[in-house]
Image 1 (spheres, rainbow, N blue to C red):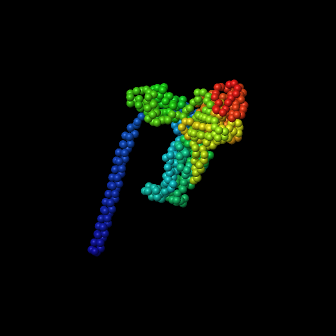
Image 2: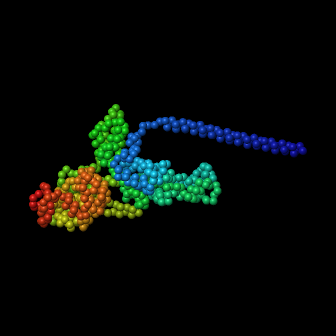
Image 3: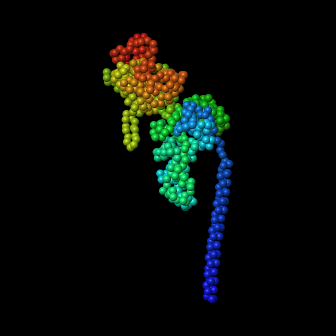
Length: 575
């Protein structure tokens, strides 16, 4: 009995001992957890206090924010683009859109305002709670393993989730991307041309399906531990019914055809100097300063976008403030322009008077941006059939590369000059081989493309015959060796540039002619089918019929004015 009682007492002691040990362990663990929780709470309170103190600090609103358009009337110079954007997005069936245009002309602001305008339309599918989600394609990075994709969405598999509740349970966790956040609203992708090809292809699939289908090796439809909403996401996809507005400063040919075919393309043009001046004047008014008239003219000369104009004003105003002035002087603006190394706008005006061998061509140098391009030709008699041709100011060769191969070819501008020499011999009874010809494209910027063909032909014909070219006429179009004027690109931008340069008459290819050109009151736009039409209408041959002798042969032509023919060409008759 005593032995049994001793064993029972020992067992009881052991039980009590371990009970005390376990109790102390859990008491210490609970105390540690409470201490950790208290420490976390104290740290959280400190961080919250820091955040609140940081939020109390705010600097003045940047001038760029103050001048951001708040209504359509404040978006200057883009009436045609806004009209197209409204037509594409404010109706009962909004479309995906790509907006082309130079930086700082209001593409992002226009997209925001159009969404708000669409919400007001009862027939529009955009509801009052439709969201505007903005994504910058240059920073929209993704992981090829599908761990992270802020644009399309991704799945966080348990192996990547760590100690999270779903990771410990072995449950894959879907993460919605911008396309899902924009569901029922608008997804604005800035610089869409910079989007990675893989993401571009994924985006195309989402745009067609209007949902995002996700996959994971850790998902099983039979797993009862997976929550119902995750089952629904994997089986039905994340909703992604949105309308995309992509903005880019690139040209259309640099955007993949697959995305272009699914979108309407809208073009915002470059701002004119007067429009730049209006934006600058508005910025000056916003900061309660005054601007000297000469300073405004400098801004109009150097700023190419509204953003540049605002930046110049902001820096010039800073100079004035440091010197205790409320007026921005022209010297302040000049200093900003020089220190910022701004280049003057490529704005050219028509020559003051008609000249032999000088023609106003037209060119484009960016998305929907046109300019006047002077083309000058000098002709010097050479031994019969031994004349040489020198072309300067153009791109000599161009290199084309795609799909792992590179092709080199002679520049289209040089090929256009050679076409001109052939067509003049065939259709205009002029033999350029009897002259040393120098064709020059002044201005410093490399020129390429076939659209200067008619201008080169008119300049060469003028230089050889000595007939001056009307200085108020401009022209664009490719010339075939049969003497026809072929269609070219960017005609609308070229016509607009000609109007601002002071041109009174423009010849464009007949295939490029549009009815809208008839609404232009201060400029006559004429369609041309053949080179003869352009030369007859652009050279100073008004009034009387004359006889022009070229290379010893007599030609019939019309002429007016006083001029000196090139050597080897004589003119009979009165002018």
